[in-house]
Length: 349
Image (cartoon, rainbow, N blue to C red):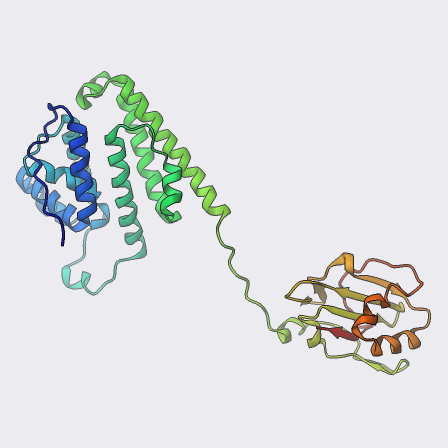
Protein backbone atom coordinates (compact mmCIF):
# COMPACT_ATOMS: atom_id res chain seq x y z
CA UNK A 1 0.00 0.00 0.00
CA UNK A 2 1.29 3.43 -0.91
CA UNK A 3 1.84 5.99 1.82
CA UNK A 4 -0.73 8.78 2.03
CA UNK A 5 0.30 11.94 0.24
CA UNK A 6 1.86 14.32 2.78
CA UNK A 7 0.43 17.73 3.60
CA UNK A 8 2.68 20.40 2.15
CA UNK A 9 0.81 23.65 2.79
CA UNK A 10 3.27 24.41 5.60
CA UNK A 11 6.14 24.72 3.06
CA UNK A 12 6.89 28.42 2.72
CA UNK A 13 10.04 29.92 1.25
CA UNK A 14 9.92 32.68 3.87
CA UNK A 15 10.05 30.12 6.69
CA UNK A 16 13.13 28.67 8.34
CA UNK A 17 13.98 25.19 7.06
CA UNK A 18 12.33 25.80 3.70
CA UNK A 19 14.97 23.92 1.71
CA UNK A 20 14.74 20.86 3.96
CA UNK A 21 10.94 20.78 3.74
CA UNK A 22 11.03 21.27 -0.02
CA UNK A 23 13.50 18.42 -0.53
CA UNK A 24 11.50 16.08 1.74
CA UNK A 25 8.43 16.80 -0.36
CA UNK A 26 10.28 16.18 -3.64
CA UNK A 27 11.81 12.98 -2.29
CA UNK A 28 8.40 11.60 -1.25
CA UNK A 29 7.01 12.00 -4.77
CA UNK A 30 10.20 10.56 -6.27
CA UNK A 31 9.80 7.41 -4.15
CA UNK A 32 6.03 7.01 -4.46
CA UNK A 33 5.10 8.32 -7.92
CA UNK A 34 6.12 7.88 -11.55
CA UNK A 35 6.12 9.75 -14.86
CA UNK A 36 2.37 9.28 -15.35
CA UNK A 37 1.74 11.08 -12.07
CA UNK A 38 4.24 13.82 -12.98
CA UNK A 39 2.43 14.33 -16.28
CA UNK A 40 -0.93 14.51 -14.51
CA UNK A 41 0.34 17.14 -12.04
CA UNK A 42 1.85 19.26 -14.82
CA UNK A 43 -1.43 19.03 -16.75
CA UNK A 44 -3.39 20.25 -13.71
CA UNK A 45 -0.96 23.14 -13.30
CA UNK A 46 -1.22 24.12 -16.98
CA UNK A 47 -4.99 23.79 -16.91
CA UNK A 48 -5.12 26.19 -13.96
CA UNK A 49 -2.63 28.70 -15.37
CA UNK A 50 -2.54 28.27 -19.17
CA UNK A 51 -5.81 26.57 -20.17
CA UNK A 52 -5.39 27.64 -23.80
CA UNK A 53 -2.14 25.62 -23.94
CA UNK A 54 -3.63 22.40 -22.61
CA UNK A 55 -3.98 20.82 -26.07
CA UNK A 56 -0.33 21.59 -26.85
CA UNK A 57 0.74 19.91 -23.64
CA UNK A 58 -1.35 16.81 -24.39
CA UNK A 59 0.62 16.40 -27.62
CA UNK A 60 3.98 16.11 -25.83
CA UNK A 61 5.36 12.59 -25.32
CA UNK A 62 6.12 11.27 -21.83
CA UNK A 63 9.85 11.09 -22.60
CA UNK A 64 9.98 14.92 -22.51
CA UNK A 65 8.52 15.05 -19.00
CA UNK A 66 11.07 15.58 -16.22
CA UNK A 67 9.47 14.20 -13.09
CA UNK A 68 10.94 16.77 -10.71
CA UNK A 69 8.93 19.55 -12.35
CA UNK A 70 5.80 17.47 -11.93
CA UNK A 71 6.51 17.27 -8.20
CA UNK A 72 7.10 21.04 -8.02
CA UNK A 73 3.79 21.62 -9.80
CA UNK A 74 2.06 19.32 -7.33
CA UNK A 75 3.54 21.09 -4.31
CA UNK A 76 2.21 24.38 -5.66
CA UNK A 77 -1.23 22.91 -6.35
CA UNK A 78 -1.37 21.47 -2.83
CA UNK A 79 -0.79 24.85 -1.19
CA UNK A 80 2.96 25.08 -0.77
CA UNK A 81 4.41 28.58 -1.15
CA UNK A 82 7.54 27.98 -3.18
CA UNK A 83 10.43 30.34 -3.75
CA UNK A 84 10.40 32.57 -6.86
CA UNK A 85 13.41 30.59 -8.09
CA UNK A 86 11.54 27.27 -8.00
CA UNK A 87 8.45 28.76 -9.61
CA UNK A 88 10.52 30.40 -12.35
CA UNK A 89 12.31 27.17 -13.15
CA UNK A 90 8.97 25.37 -13.36
CA UNK A 91 7.62 28.06 -15.68
CA UNK A 92 10.72 27.91 -17.90
CA UNK A 93 10.40 24.15 -18.18
CA UNK A 94 6.70 24.30 -19.05
CA UNK A 95 7.25 26.98 -21.68
CA UNK A 96 10.07 24.95 -23.22
CA UNK A 97 7.70 21.98 -23.52
CA UNK A 98 4.93 24.02 -25.10
CA UNK A 99 7.26 25.84 -27.50
CA UNK A 100 9.27 22.80 -28.63
CA UNK A 101 6.42 20.45 -29.53
CA UNK A 102 9.23 18.09 -30.45
CA UNK A 103 7.27 14.87 -30.90
CA UNK A 104 3.54 14.57 -31.34
CA UNK A 105 1.86 11.54 -29.82
CA UNK A 106 0.06 9.24 -32.21
CA UNK A 107 -3.68 8.66 -31.88
CA UNK A 108 -4.50 6.44 -28.91
CA UNK A 109 -5.77 3.56 -31.02
CA UNK A 110 -2.46 3.48 -32.95
CA UNK A 111 -0.32 4.18 -29.90
CA UNK A 112 -1.88 1.29 -28.01
CA UNK A 113 -0.70 -1.12 -30.70
CA UNK A 114 2.87 0.18 -30.74
CA UNK A 115 5.38 -0.65 -28.07
CA UNK A 116 7.61 2.04 -26.63
CA UNK A 117 10.84 2.36 -28.60
CA UNK A 118 14.24 1.71 -27.03
CA UNK A 119 15.11 5.39 -27.52
CA UNK A 120 11.95 6.54 -25.72
CA UNK A 121 12.56 4.09 -22.87
CA UNK A 122 16.18 5.21 -22.54
CA UNK A 123 15.18 8.88 -22.56
CA UNK A 124 12.48 8.27 -19.97
CA UNK A 125 14.86 6.50 -17.59
CA UNK A 126 17.53 9.12 -18.15
CA UNK A 127 14.94 11.82 -17.34
CA UNK A 128 14.18 10.09 -14.05
CA UNK A 129 17.86 10.20 -13.12
CA UNK A 130 18.08 13.83 -14.26
CA UNK A 131 15.19 14.54 -11.91
CA UNK A 132 17.30 13.20 -9.06
CA UNK A 133 20.17 15.47 -10.10
CA UNK A 134 17.80 18.44 -10.17
CA UNK A 135 17.00 17.61 -6.55
CA UNK A 136 20.71 17.53 -5.72
CA UNK A 137 21.14 21.00 -7.20
CA UNK A 138 18.20 22.26 -5.13
CA UNK A 139 19.83 20.88 -1.98
CA UNK A 140 22.76 23.23 -2.59
CA UNK A 141 25.13 20.47 -1.44
CA UNK A 142 28.85 20.21 -2.16
CA UNK A 143 29.53 16.63 -1.05
CA UNK A 144 27.76 14.83 -3.93
CA UNK A 145 30.05 12.88 -6.26
CA UNK A 146 28.37 12.07 -9.56
CA UNK A 147 31.02 9.58 -10.68
CA UNK A 148 30.58 7.49 -7.53
CA UNK A 149 26.79 7.67 -7.84
CA UNK A 150 26.85 6.54 -11.49
CA UNK A 151 29.10 3.60 -10.61
CA UNK A 152 27.04 2.63 -7.56
CA UNK A 153 23.81 2.63 -9.58
CA UNK A 154 25.49 1.09 -12.64
CA UNK A 155 23.82 3.66 -14.88
CA UNK A 156 23.79 2.37 -18.48
CA UNK A 157 26.02 4.20 -20.95
CA UNK A 158 23.10 5.20 -23.28
CA UNK A 159 21.65 7.31 -20.43
CA UNK A 160 24.86 9.31 -20.17
CA UNK A 161 24.30 11.10 -23.48
CA UNK A 162 20.97 12.52 -22.26
CA UNK A 163 22.43 13.44 -18.87
CA UNK A 164 25.38 15.13 -20.57
CA UNK A 165 23.02 17.24 -22.72
CA UNK A 166 21.11 18.32 -19.61
CA UNK A 167 24.31 19.15 -17.72
CA UNK A 168 25.70 21.29 -20.57
CA UNK A 169 22.41 23.18 -20.74
CA UNK A 170 22.52 23.78 -16.99
CA UNK A 171 26.11 24.98 -17.16
CA UNK A 172 25.15 27.50 -19.82
CA UNK A 173 22.22 28.66 -17.70
CA UNK A 174 24.36 29.12 -14.58
CA UNK A 175 27.06 30.98 -16.48
CA UNK A 176 24.45 33.40 -17.82
CA UNK A 177 23.17 34.01 -14.29
CA UNK A 178 26.73 34.57 -13.06
CA UNK A 179 27.28 37.20 -15.77
CA UNK A 180 23.94 39.00 -15.34
CA UNK A 181 22.89 41.02 -12.29
CA UNK A 182 19.35 41.08 -13.64
CA UNK A 183 19.20 37.27 -13.79
CA UNK A 184 20.74 37.00 -10.32
CA UNK A 185 17.92 39.16 -8.96
CA UNK A 186 15.34 37.11 -10.86
CA UNK A 187 16.68 33.80 -9.55
CA UNK A 188 17.21 35.19 -6.08
CA UNK A 189 20.86 34.15 -6.17
CA UNK A 190 24.07 35.88 -5.29
CA UNK A 191 26.81 36.04 -7.89
CA UNK A 192 28.86 33.70 -5.72
CA UNK A 193 26.07 31.10 -5.63
CA UNK A 194 25.81 31.15 -9.43
CA UNK A 195 29.58 30.70 -9.63
CA UNK A 196 29.52 27.74 -7.21
CA UNK A 197 26.67 26.06 -9.08
CA UNK A 198 28.50 26.51 -12.38
CA UNK A 199 31.61 24.90 -10.88
CA UNK A 200 29.49 22.10 -9.43
CA UNK A 201 27.80 21.29 -12.76
CA UNK A 202 31.17 21.54 -14.56
CA UNK A 203 32.50 18.89 -12.17
CA UNK A 204 29.45 16.75 -13.04
CA UNK A 205 30.29 17.02 -16.75
CA UNK A 206 33.85 15.93 -16.02
CA UNK A 207 32.51 12.97 -14.02
CA UNK A 208 30.23 12.02 -16.92
CA UNK A 209 33.26 11.93 -19.24
CA UNK A 210 35.21 9.83 -16.72
CA UNK A 211 32.27 7.46 -16.36
CA UNK A 212 32.04 7.02 -20.13
CA UNK A 213 35.73 6.09 -20.19
CA UNK A 214 35.21 3.74 -17.23
CA UNK A 215 32.31 1.97 -18.98
CA UNK A 216 34.32 1.65 -22.17
CA UNK A 217 37.33 0.19 -20.37
CA UNK A 218 35.18 -2.32 -18.49
CA UNK A 219 32.95 -3.30 -21.39
CA UNK A 220 32.85 -7.03 -21.93
CA UNK A 221 34.40 -7.90 -25.28
CA UNK A 222 32.02 -9.34 -27.80
CA UNK A 223 32.66 -13.08 -27.87
CA UNK A 224 34.15 -14.23 -31.13
CA UNK A 225 32.22 -16.89 -32.95
CA UNK A 226 34.49 -19.90 -33.20
CA UNK A 227 34.86 -21.41 -36.65
CA UNK A 228 34.32 -25.14 -37.02
CA UNK A 229 37.48 -27.13 -37.84
CA UNK A 230 36.27 -27.83 -41.39
CA UNK A 231 35.81 -24.09 -42.01
CA UNK A 232 39.27 -23.31 -40.59
CA UNK A 233 41.22 -25.74 -42.78
CA UNK A 234 39.30 -25.28 -46.05
CA UNK A 235 42.09 -23.10 -47.54
CA UNK A 236 45.03 -24.93 -45.95
CA UNK A 237 47.65 -26.06 -48.49
CA UNK A 238 49.68 -29.15 -47.51
CA UNK A 239 51.22 -32.30 -49.03
CA UNK A 240 48.82 -35.22 -48.88
CA UNK A 241 51.44 -37.96 -49.47
CA UNK A 242 55.17 -38.30 -50.19
CA UNK A 243 55.95 -41.34 -52.38
CA UNK A 244 59.68 -41.35 -51.66
CA UNK A 245 59.20 -41.39 -47.88
CA UNK A 246 56.01 -43.44 -48.17
CA UNK A 247 54.35 -41.15 -45.60
CA UNK A 248 50.81 -39.86 -45.79
CA UNK A 249 49.65 -36.76 -43.90
CA UNK A 250 47.18 -37.14 -41.08
CA UNK A 251 43.87 -35.31 -41.52
CA UNK A 252 44.30 -31.52 -41.25
CA UNK A 253 41.12 -31.49 -39.15
CA UNK A 254 43.24 -32.88 -36.31
CA UNK A 255 45.31 -29.69 -36.22
CA UNK A 256 42.42 -27.62 -34.84
CA UNK A 257 42.48 -27.80 -31.03
CA UNK A 258 45.72 -29.80 -30.87
CA UNK A 259 48.39 -29.06 -28.24
CA UNK A 260 51.15 -30.19 -30.64
CA UNK A 261 51.46 -30.23 -34.43
CA UNK A 262 54.45 -31.80 -36.21
CA UNK A 263 55.14 -30.79 -39.83
CA UNK A 264 57.89 -31.92 -42.23
CA UNK A 265 58.93 -29.87 -45.27
CA UNK A 266 60.01 -32.42 -47.92
CA UNK A 267 61.77 -29.73 -49.97
CA UNK A 268 63.91 -28.14 -47.24
CA UNK A 269 64.08 -31.28 -45.05
CA UNK A 270 63.02 -29.26 -42.01
CA UNK A 271 60.95 -30.70 -39.16
CA UNK A 272 58.79 -28.20 -37.27
CA UNK A 273 56.89 -28.65 -34.03
CA UNK A 274 54.19 -26.21 -32.89
CA UNK A 275 53.14 -26.34 -29.25
CA UNK A 276 50.63 -24.51 -27.08
CA UNK A 277 49.38 -24.72 -23.51
CA UNK A 278 46.18 -22.85 -24.37
CA UNK A 279 42.94 -24.72 -23.68
CA UNK A 280 41.71 -23.68 -27.14
CA UNK A 281 44.63 -25.46 -28.79
CA UNK A 282 46.23 -24.56 -32.11
CA UNK A 283 43.97 -22.87 -34.64
CA UNK A 284 44.15 -22.33 -38.40
CA UNK A 285 43.53 -19.19 -40.43
CA UNK A 286 44.00 -19.48 -44.18
CA UNK A 287 47.35 -21.24 -44.66
CA UNK A 288 48.80 -20.28 -41.27
CA UNK A 289 48.80 -21.91 -37.85
CA UNK A 290 47.77 -19.69 -34.96
CA UNK A 291 47.61 -19.71 -31.16
CA UNK A 292 50.90 -21.60 -30.76
CA UNK A 293 53.61 -20.47 -28.36
CA UNK A 294 56.83 -19.48 -30.19
CA UNK A 295 59.05 -20.14 -27.16
CA UNK A 296 57.86 -23.77 -27.05
CA UNK A 297 58.05 -24.30 -30.82
CA UNK A 298 60.99 -24.65 -33.20
CA UNK A 299 62.30 -25.96 -36.54
CA UNK A 300 65.33 -28.22 -37.16
CA UNK A 301 66.88 -29.73 -40.29
CA UNK A 302 66.85 -33.55 -40.46
CA UNK A 303 70.01 -35.40 -41.48
CA UNK A 304 68.25 -38.76 -41.66
CA UNK A 305 64.60 -37.99 -42.51
CA UNK A 306 63.44 -41.62 -42.99
CA UNK A 307 64.72 -42.87 -39.61
CA UNK A 308 63.77 -39.67 -37.72
CA UNK A 309 60.22 -39.49 -39.07
CA UNK A 310 59.65 -43.19 -38.41
CA UNK A 311 60.79 -42.70 -34.80
CA UNK A 312 58.58 -39.60 -34.50
CA UNK A 313 55.51 -41.52 -35.64
CA UNK A 314 56.06 -44.19 -32.95
CA UNK A 315 57.14 -41.87 -30.09
CA UNK A 316 54.97 -41.68 -26.98
CA UNK A 317 54.06 -38.45 -25.19
CA UNK A 318 57.01 -38.71 -22.81
CA UNK A 319 59.47 -39.20 -25.70
CA UNK A 320 57.90 -36.29 -27.61
CA UNK A 321 58.85 -33.88 -24.84
CA UNK A 322 62.58 -34.25 -25.68
CA UNK A 323 62.33 -35.37 -29.30
CA UNK A 324 63.14 -32.07 -31.00
CA UNK A 325 65.76 -31.13 -28.39
CA UNK A 326 67.69 -34.38 -29.00
CA UNK A 327 68.16 -33.57 -32.67
CA UNK A 328 71.73 -32.27 -33.11
CA UNK A 329 71.03 -29.63 -35.77
CA UNK A 330 70.64 -25.91 -35.00
CA UNK A 331 67.12 -24.80 -33.97
CA UNK A 332 65.31 -22.08 -35.90
CA UNK A 333 62.17 -20.08 -35.25
CA UNK A 334 58.87 -21.22 -36.71
CA UNK A 335 56.70 -18.90 -38.80
CA UNK A 336 53.36 -20.74 -38.74
CA UNK A 337 53.02 -21.00 -42.52
CA UNK A 338 52.01 -24.28 -44.18
CA UNK A 339 52.56 -25.03 -47.90
CA UNK A 340 52.23 -27.82 -50.45
CA UNK A 341 55.70 -29.22 -49.61
CA UNK A 342 54.70 -29.98 -46.00
CA UNK A 343 53.49 -33.26 -44.58
CA UNK A 344 51.37 -33.26 -41.42
CA UNK A 345 53.30 -36.00 -39.60
CA UNK A 346 51.25 -36.15 -36.40
CA UNK A 347 49.21 -34.13 -33.88
CA UNK A 348 48.67 -34.43 -30.14
CA UNK A 349 45.45 -33.31 -28.48
